[in-house]
Image (cartoon, rainbow, N blue to C red; front, side):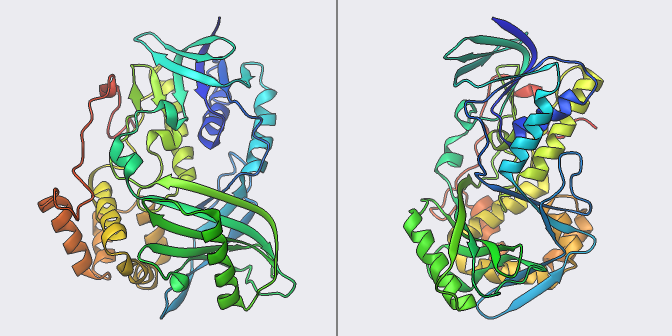
Length: 406
């Protein structure tokens, strides 16, 4: 049995980001990462908005200074200044960051399958098919080992499939990415197309749906074919890569610490923004906060990701996504067309103050949100509600601080 200071369960974005910050923190701690696969494939893309990117991790593969939001009636291109929209490939991230980690003498990687995780007042234990590993703290990024509540598992999901498409003729505009194009949605669910053009002839074209039940691949393929034909007049193209995902969308609180010494990170810790699905920048900020706490206090104080008024906003938006999906295209169009882009992006990043939020809300249709407010908070057990907001009692949960430590 080997002993470590910190054990990271899972080598995805949150695990690798935290490991890199721990190794470079000066703590000198022994860090073990357990990940069953080699993590060499490009299984997804990560995007975020920021004025300068995240050079601490790696440079962005592509950036855009403008975004476009379209409905069946309107189309708006918006300059993001001073922000940029950043994209990089997961495969590049895995390879570059893991190569750096493996050079550190106090970092160990075990390519094993985790079977069980437990904690006590003094540490955490991770069992794999090859052995048992103990650490002072276990940072878990694997959803199967996190106490995710039933409303999250059974609730609405953002699911998508995207193709990297190459065309013979130049049809894309590499200067502007399409954040949401609602022109193609024909069903009773929120549907939009997301386009990341990297040249005039190549782009990631991703079809996204919000619903309880994910689609079959054939349904996404048909929707993408229809979009390429209707939007660009292209019926023949070459697919070089594909990626897909399913993201639970919930404003409910996730446990950050269980069994005293198990800290849940990444999506397993509720870091996904409930109303948008964006996660990566929140992972970066959460990892930095955890390492800072370890340096200052000798233990982490993980923050609940969305609290207070932002959780309130997310609940209203999720109700509208479920019960009034036809309102969403107009709301999103007006959000970007009637407000400065910098204010919108800071709002979506939960960095605005209340006065700025009021300026945003007065430019949006008020009736849908008032209806959502009534169902979510005044009559929460109505069949039209998203359900009551449970307050689960997790062992060790008081170790989490709702506002973190500054």
